[in-house]
Length: 250
Image (cartoon, rainbow, N blue to C red; front, top):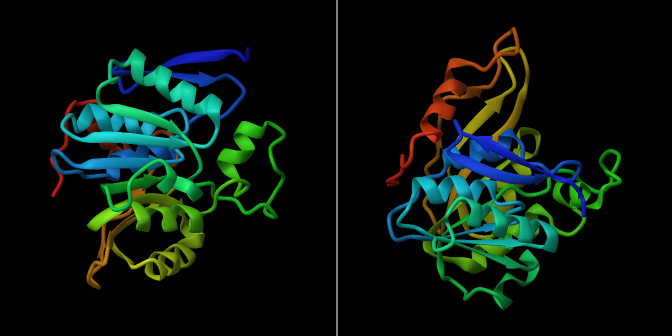
Protein backbone atom coordinates (compact mmCIF):
# COMPACT_ATOMS: atom_id res chain seq x y z
CA UNK A 1 0.00 0.00 0.00
CA UNK A 2 1.35 3.42 -0.93
CA UNK A 3 2.55 5.48 2.02
CA UNK A 4 0.24 8.20 3.30
CA UNK A 5 0.70 11.31 5.39
CA UNK A 6 -1.74 12.69 7.95
CA UNK A 7 -1.52 16.48 7.82
CA UNK A 8 -3.09 19.05 10.11
CA UNK A 9 -4.35 22.23 8.44
CA UNK A 10 -6.09 25.42 9.51
CA UNK A 11 -4.38 25.53 12.90
CA UNK A 12 -5.11 21.87 13.50
CA UNK A 13 -8.85 22.21 12.98
CA UNK A 14 -8.81 19.62 10.19
CA UNK A 15 -6.80 16.46 9.63
CA UNK A 16 -6.24 15.23 6.09
CA UNK A 17 -4.87 11.93 4.82
CA UNK A 18 -2.94 12.30 1.54
CA UNK A 19 -0.73 10.08 -0.58
CA UNK A 20 2.92 10.83 0.07
CA UNK A 21 3.77 10.59 -3.64
CA UNK A 22 0.32 10.68 -5.25
CA UNK A 23 -2.19 13.51 -5.63
CA UNK A 24 -2.00 16.17 -2.90
CA UNK A 25 -4.27 19.19 -2.66
CA UNK A 26 -2.86 22.62 -3.48
CA UNK A 27 -3.53 26.23 -2.55
CA UNK A 28 -6.12 26.74 -5.29
CA UNK A 29 -8.45 24.32 -3.45
CA UNK A 30 -8.10 26.36 -0.25
CA UNK A 31 -8.84 29.59 -2.13
CA UNK A 32 -11.89 28.09 -3.82
CA UNK A 33 -13.28 26.90 -0.48
CA UNK A 34 -12.89 30.43 0.93
CA UNK A 35 -14.61 31.95 -2.14
CA UNK A 36 -17.77 29.84 -1.81
CA UNK A 37 -20.96 31.06 -0.11
CA UNK A 38 -23.91 28.77 0.60
CA UNK A 39 -27.31 29.18 2.18
CA UNK A 40 -28.42 27.04 5.12
CA UNK A 41 -30.25 23.84 4.09
CA UNK A 42 -28.79 24.00 0.58
CA UNK A 43 -27.64 20.88 -1.29
CA UNK A 44 -24.16 21.11 -2.81
CA UNK A 45 -22.05 18.67 -4.83
CA UNK A 46 -18.38 18.78 -5.72
CA UNK A 47 -17.42 17.14 -9.00
CA UNK A 48 -13.94 15.63 -8.95
CA UNK A 49 -13.63 15.98 -5.18
CA UNK A 50 -10.24 14.25 -4.89
CA UNK A 51 -9.34 13.49 -1.28
CA UNK A 52 -12.14 15.79 -0.12
CA UNK A 53 -10.28 18.88 1.10
CA UNK A 54 -12.83 21.41 -0.20
CA UNK A 55 -15.77 19.43 1.19
CA UNK A 56 -14.08 19.10 4.58
CA UNK A 57 -13.61 22.86 4.87
CA UNK A 58 -17.11 23.66 3.62
CA UNK A 59 -18.81 21.11 5.88
CA UNK A 60 -17.13 22.68 8.91
CA UNK A 61 -18.17 26.17 7.86
CA UNK A 62 -21.67 25.44 6.60
CA UNK A 63 -22.97 22.84 9.07
CA UNK A 64 -26.57 23.03 7.80
CA UNK A 65 -25.73 22.21 4.17
CA UNK A 66 -26.05 18.71 2.67
CA UNK A 67 -22.81 17.90 0.80
CA UNK A 68 -22.00 15.23 -1.79
CA UNK A 69 -18.77 14.53 -3.62
CA UNK A 70 -18.16 12.69 -6.89
CA UNK A 71 -14.72 11.27 -7.66
CA UNK A 72 -13.74 9.12 -10.65
CA UNK A 73 -10.66 7.57 -9.00
CA UNK A 74 -11.64 4.87 -6.50
CA UNK A 75 -8.53 5.29 -4.32
CA UNK A 76 -9.09 9.03 -3.96
CA UNK A 77 -12.80 8.49 -3.26
CA UNK A 78 -11.89 6.06 -0.48
CA UNK A 79 -9.40 8.54 0.92
CA UNK A 80 -12.09 11.25 0.92
CA UNK A 81 -14.34 8.88 2.89
CA UNK A 82 -11.54 8.28 5.38
CA UNK A 83 -10.95 12.03 5.73
CA UNK A 84 -14.63 12.64 6.34
CA UNK A 85 -14.67 9.98 9.06
CA UNK A 86 -11.54 11.18 10.87
CA UNK A 87 -13.01 14.72 11.00
CA UNK A 88 -16.38 13.44 12.32
CA UNK A 89 -18.33 14.65 9.26
CA UNK A 90 -19.93 11.30 8.35
CA UNK A 91 -23.48 12.60 8.61
CA UNK A 92 -22.86 15.71 6.52
CA UNK A 93 -20.86 14.55 3.48
CA UNK A 94 -21.42 11.56 1.20
CA UNK A 95 -18.83 10.46 -1.37
CA UNK A 96 -19.75 8.68 -4.59
CA UNK A 97 -17.38 7.01 -7.04
CA UNK A 98 -18.22 7.92 -10.62
CA UNK A 99 -17.64 9.99 -13.73
CA UNK A 100 -18.96 13.53 -14.18
CA UNK A 101 -19.98 12.49 -17.71
CA UNK A 102 -22.57 10.16 -16.21
CA UNK A 103 -23.45 12.17 -13.09
CA UNK A 104 -27.16 11.73 -13.83
CA UNK A 105 -26.75 8.00 -13.28
CA UNK A 106 -25.93 8.81 -9.63
CA UNK A 107 -27.79 12.04 -8.87
CA UNK A 108 -31.23 13.31 -9.82
CA UNK A 109 -31.41 16.09 -12.39
CA UNK A 110 -31.91 19.59 -11.02
CA UNK A 111 -31.41 18.45 -7.43
CA UNK A 112 -28.56 20.73 -6.23
CA UNK A 113 -28.41 24.39 -5.22
CA UNK A 114 -24.66 24.56 -5.90
CA UNK A 115 -22.10 22.66 -7.98
CA UNK A 116 -18.40 23.02 -7.15
CA UNK A 117 -15.41 21.90 -9.17
CA UNK A 118 -11.66 22.39 -9.39
CA UNK A 119 -11.17 20.63 -12.73
CA UNK A 120 -8.01 19.32 -14.43
CA UNK A 121 -6.34 22.39 -15.92
CA UNK A 122 -3.97 21.01 -18.51
CA UNK A 123 -4.82 19.81 -21.99
CA UNK A 124 -3.42 16.39 -22.84
CA UNK A 125 -1.13 18.04 -25.41
CA UNK A 126 0.11 20.60 -22.85
CA UNK A 127 3.32 19.63 -21.05
CA UNK A 128 4.67 16.34 -19.76
CA UNK A 129 2.03 14.06 -18.28
CA UNK A 130 2.95 12.90 -14.78
CA UNK A 131 3.93 9.21 -14.70
CA UNK A 132 1.89 8.78 -11.49
CA UNK A 133 -1.61 8.12 -12.89
CA UNK A 134 -3.41 9.64 -9.89
CA UNK A 135 -1.63 12.96 -10.40
CA UNK A 136 -2.01 12.80 -14.19
CA UNK A 137 -5.79 12.32 -14.03
CA UNK A 138 -6.14 15.14 -11.48
CA UNK A 139 -4.08 17.63 -13.51
CA UNK A 140 -4.63 16.74 -17.19
CA UNK A 141 -7.87 16.43 -19.14
CA UNK A 142 -7.49 12.66 -19.44
CA UNK A 143 -10.79 11.50 -17.92
CA UNK A 144 -12.57 14.81 -17.54
CA UNK A 145 -12.50 18.32 -19.01
CA UNK A 146 -13.96 21.72 -18.19
CA UNK A 147 -16.67 21.11 -20.80
CA UNK A 148 -17.71 17.87 -19.08
CA UNK A 149 -17.87 19.49 -15.64
CA UNK A 150 -19.91 22.48 -16.83
CA UNK A 151 -22.34 20.27 -18.76
CA UNK A 152 -22.83 18.14 -15.66
CA UNK A 153 -23.40 21.27 -13.58
CA UNK A 154 -26.16 22.41 -15.93
CA UNK A 155 -27.89 19.05 -15.55
CA UNK A 156 -27.58 18.93 -11.76
CA UNK A 157 -28.46 22.51 -10.80
CA UNK A 158 -31.86 23.64 -9.64
CA UNK A 159 -33.22 26.78 -11.35
CA UNK A 160 -31.00 29.75 -10.41
CA UNK A 161 -28.46 27.35 -8.86
CA UNK A 162 -24.82 28.41 -8.48
CA UNK A 163 -21.52 27.14 -9.86
CA UNK A 164 -18.22 27.77 -8.08
CA UNK A 165 -14.89 27.01 -9.74
CA UNK A 166 -11.22 27.94 -10.00
CA UNK A 167 -9.37 27.89 -13.31
CA UNK A 168 -6.18 29.27 -14.91
CA UNK A 169 -6.60 32.96 -15.67
CA UNK A 170 -5.23 32.49 -19.19
CA UNK A 171 -8.21 30.21 -19.96
CA UNK A 172 -10.86 32.60 -18.60
CA UNK A 173 -12.41 33.25 -22.03
CA UNK A 174 -12.86 29.52 -22.57
CA UNK A 175 -14.50 29.24 -19.15
CA UNK A 176 -16.93 32.10 -19.77
CA UNK A 177 -17.78 30.78 -23.26
CA UNK A 178 -18.60 27.32 -21.91
CA UNK A 179 -20.61 28.83 -19.06
CA UNK A 180 -22.77 30.74 -21.51
CA UNK A 181 -23.15 27.76 -23.88
CA UNK A 182 -24.71 25.99 -20.91
CA UNK A 183 -26.94 28.89 -19.79
CA UNK A 184 -24.70 29.72 -16.82
CA UNK A 185 -24.00 33.42 -16.40
CA UNK A 186 -20.79 34.57 -14.65
CA UNK A 187 -21.82 36.65 -11.64
CA UNK A 188 -18.63 37.08 -9.57
CA UNK A 189 -14.94 36.92 -10.51
CA UNK A 190 -11.76 37.24 -8.45
CA UNK A 191 -8.29 37.19 -10.02
CA UNK A 192 -5.48 35.55 -8.05
CA UNK A 193 -1.85 36.63 -8.52
CA UNK A 194 1.28 34.95 -7.19
CA UNK A 195 2.67 38.42 -6.34
CA UNK A 196 2.30 42.06 -7.38
CA UNK A 197 4.82 41.66 -10.21
CA UNK A 198 3.33 38.61 -11.94
CA UNK A 199 0.46 38.03 -14.33
CA UNK A 200 -2.76 36.60 -12.95
CA UNK A 201 -2.40 32.88 -12.19
CA UNK A 202 -5.95 31.79 -11.39
CA UNK A 203 -9.47 33.09 -11.50
CA UNK A 204 -12.21 32.25 -9.01
CA UNK A 205 -15.64 32.36 -10.62
CA UNK A 206 -19.23 32.11 -9.41
CA UNK A 207 -21.92 31.54 -12.03
CA UNK A 208 -25.68 31.25 -11.87
CA UNK A 209 -27.91 29.06 -14.03
CA UNK A 210 -30.12 31.28 -16.23
CA UNK A 211 -28.75 34.36 -14.47
CA UNK A 212 -28.99 37.89 -15.78
CA UNK A 213 -26.02 39.77 -17.26
CA UNK A 214 -24.46 41.51 -14.29
CA UNK A 215 -20.88 40.78 -13.23
CA UNK A 216 -19.09 41.73 -10.00
CA UNK A 217 -15.29 41.82 -10.32
CA UNK A 218 -13.83 41.62 -6.83
CA UNK A 219 -10.53 43.07 -5.64
CA UNK A 220 -7.62 40.85 -6.72
CA UNK A 221 -5.84 38.53 -4.31
CA UNK A 222 -2.03 38.51 -4.09
CA UNK A 223 -0.55 35.40 -2.48
CA UNK A 224 3.08 36.30 -1.74
CA UNK A 225 5.13 39.32 -0.73
CA UNK A 226 8.51 40.02 -2.33
CA UNK A 227 10.20 37.88 0.34
CA UNK A 228 7.88 34.95 -0.55
CA UNK A 229 5.98 35.11 2.75
CA UNK A 230 2.19 35.24 2.62
CA UNK A 231 0.52 38.63 2.15
CA UNK A 232 -1.85 40.17 4.67
CA UNK A 233 -4.75 39.15 2.41
CA UNK A 234 -3.67 35.52 2.57
CA UNK A 235 -3.24 35.73 6.34
CA UNK A 236 -6.87 36.88 6.50
CA UNK A 237 -7.97 33.95 4.28
CA UNK A 238 -6.26 31.43 6.56
CA UNK A 239 -7.56 33.15 9.68
CA UNK A 240 -11.15 33.13 8.43
CA UNK A 241 -10.93 29.50 7.33
CA UNK A 242 -9.65 28.50 10.78
CA UNK A 243 -12.78 29.92 12.43
CA UNK A 244 -15.70 27.47 12.31
CA UNK A 245 -18.25 28.36 11.12
CA UNK A 246 -17.87 31.48 9.00
CA UNK A 247 -20.78 30.80 6.68
CA UNK A 248 -24.16 32.18 5.87
CA UNK A 249 -24.18 32.93 2.17
CA UNK A 250 -26.46 35.27 0.32
